[in-house]
Length: 458
Ligand SMILES: Nc1ncnc2c1ncn2[C@@H]1O[C@H](COP(=O)(O)OP(=O)(O)OP(=O)(O)O)[C@@H](O)[C@H]1O
Ligand SMILES: [Mg+2]
Image (tube, rainbow, N blue to C red; front, top):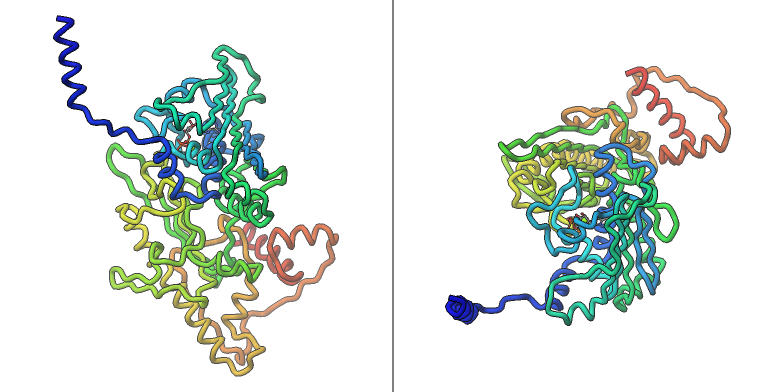
């Protein structure tokens, strides 16, 4: 009997063909399509996801994530709760999310590759240390040694399954050393560190603004709210869409499209176009391509290609779902899956919302081109120049953006105006000016008045 089983196994083995990928090829494939900054951003997403697991969609105050880069070492540490031994053993170090892996509602993590891909992208030696209230472990890996070994496993270097830790001591630290030479070069450049800071600021605006204290090389990374012009004649269009399907989690989408103005000329182009978020994570920043409806035709609707005359267009699309697999993002969280039926339906709605804004900006361009005195602003230009940018979430909205009809300059103004003058402490005024992103004290006055008017009067 024993003999016949052995013979059968031998025969079965003879029929098998080895298709196991080599580790080096695998590492190369995994890291090739992601740039360094999105890879690092993935690691901060993991900290934020862990904090969200405790706090849901509430405040993330008291949680922190600290990123540190230098030519010798990369590290990220957080106090967001840590990884259990079971998570580490069964899921966290797997390449790809296995079935049954626990998932966090409304998370950014979905694919099960971010942490490993970031580590391999940065260097050839890593250490992951994680502490929960009940356990602590360390995994230390020399990637060169691991890549030569046939087995697809890592080993715990330290393991304590019966520890007791205060919740304030819990968290995870990922350290990478023996950096790839090109990565070490980048980490030595101030310009790279500034770029990383700016990206973390915009991509992680949601968790940071909810309280996740994020630092890069010990300096805080502040959240930057999305801004839009608040003037009643320029109020942005807003639409909410819901996509439900039996047995699947709901996807809700909030769209906004209106007019913005950058505080700084160098940001004009970056800020223009569509900003697309999935579960709070910025996926596309100021997109100006056919992915978001530019240069596209659909349903008797036509949108021109992007041109600098549309620098003032601001579009925002927020996709949210408890199940991240329902969202139309790619694994690097830097692009959209344009084949997704939900995204295709939403794109049409985005085009409908942007059409009147495009019309308005065409009119604004005509006005600028046709004015007699090049130093004089026309009525539309004055409207845009005089409106105050405010945070999108505070802006009054309407279902459709309606291009304003302005009276010719020569006609007397029908609205009776009243000048208001008052003095306030200089330091406070400067703080308010910064918060409003106002360019003059006149804008500070108008902005604070508008704010009060919309909050308390209208
Ligand atoms: N800082 C952290 N704190 C707690 N758990 C973490 C942390 N980083 C990673 N993990 C655990 O490791 C798992 C794997 O992380 P990884 O980034 O590789 O994939 P993911 O977040 O599940 O999906 P994605 O590839 O979309 O990022 C996470 O799902 C989480 O359980
Ligand atoms: Mg992740």
